[in-house]
Image (tube, rainbow, N blue to C red; front, side, top):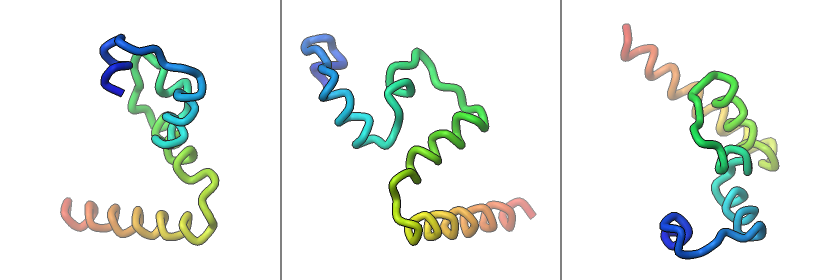
Length: 77
């Protein structure tokens, strides 16, 4: 990765596909000049992470988020 970042090696299409799959993001996300933190972008990232996960894991992730957000809410009160 470091050699690619420094321009010492080229990134092949196969390596790019493996990279985005490993990171759980899309190719356009990796190749973008900048990434905005808009609600739409965040929801797209969430969808990419959840895609292909079994229903049980998706439900566990929702439960973790609910717990986290309820913690944030109680901290603000």
